[in-house]
Structure formats: C-alpha cells, structure tokens
Image 1 (cartoon, rainbow, N blue to C red):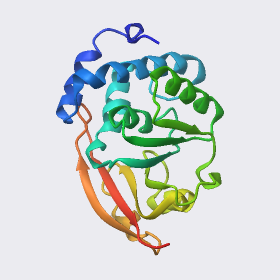
Image 2: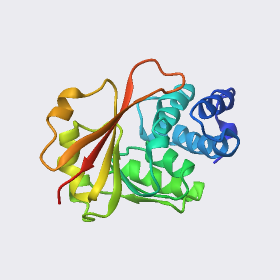
Image 3: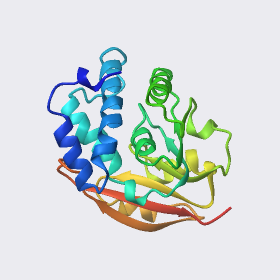
Amino acid sequence: MNASTLPAGLDAPLRQGLTELGLDAAVLAPPLLDYLALLHRWNRTYNLTAIRDPAEMVTRHLLDSLAMHAHVAEGSLADLGTGPGLPGIPLAITHPGLRVTLVESNGKKARFMREAVRQLGLANARVAESRAEALGEPAAYDNLTARAMDTLAGIIAVGGHLLKPGGALLAMKGVCPDEEIAALPPGWRAEAIHPLRVPGLVGERHLVVVRKTGA
C-alpha cells in the first residue's frame, strides 16, 4: 500500500480540509491517504463505492466522514452498514482511543476492510461481517453511527439493541430530518442536531444525536 499510487495533488486539499476541521493534518494525512490508495485500488476490481475519482473521494469520503469527529467520544462505537469502512476507518485513524466495530454484511467489503485494518495497523478497529440486526452483541456499545443507512427509526430497528442504556446514535444526515425525529420510537429522544460543514462539499449536512433513554 502506497499513497504514491494515487494521482498527484490530493495531499494539499486533504491537509487543508483536515486543518479546517481542527485536526492535525501532519499526523493524519499520511494514513488517510494510505487508506484511500487501498480503497481506490480495490475499487477498480470489486466496486466497493460508486465514487471512483480519488479527488472526489477525499471530499465525499474522508472529509465528509470526519466532519463529525468533534462529536465522537472515546469508548466503543459500532459503524452500521459501513460499506468499505466509512466513516468508521477514518474515525479509527483520528481517534486511537476509540474502539470501532465495522459492521457490514457484504463479503467483498468486509474482506477489503480486514485488509485495510491489517495494513494500516488499526489495533482499535475490528470487522463484524454481519447484518446489524443479526449481530449478537446486545448493549455492547457506547455509540452507534450510520452514514448512509435508512431513517432514524429504521437504524434503531436494526441496530438499537447494540447500544448501552444511555448510549447515543450519531446519525449523519443531509438536510435536518424533522419528520424522522418526530417518528422516533418510545425510549429514544433527539438530544442535539449539529450542522456540519464539510470542506469542499456544497450542500447541507447535519449530525443528529439520538439518545437511548429506555432499557
């Protein structure tokens, strides 16, 4: 794995974006580019993501995933329907004290993530090749996240059992999902809605924090 296999010119916008997000670009840009190089290489064969332009991947995958980083507490996090590891792998890179479980049922995506975790030396990340609803780890996680998966109620239906009482779902959305918030099931409440700014991305992004209040 070598970031030099990527097209030239990706390092500067990534570093600028990381700096705008309040992250240490000097430390984080190299492993993030290593991850991107591996994703770009595997994507040519295995179609892991519809985004194929590495420059677009910097914005729409790496920086978009990390726009929520300030709201992620240390502890344990399950990333549901993570695909090729988004946002879980970028979060694991930027938060070494965060224990990340990458939940994905697609076999080729799970294989890619296991290789990425190995090559990046991410001791704080593991892959669970499973549907979220079938993962037998009840009340095991402080936080859940889901970047492109269903409505809030739908995410809770398949993954809510994984959260500890008092834990939080950190759901990345585009426009503020008022109707989804109004449809939250009993035992869950919207605690905060954080507008996010993704460097280089036009359009609304919000992080909805939903707290598990029931057993």
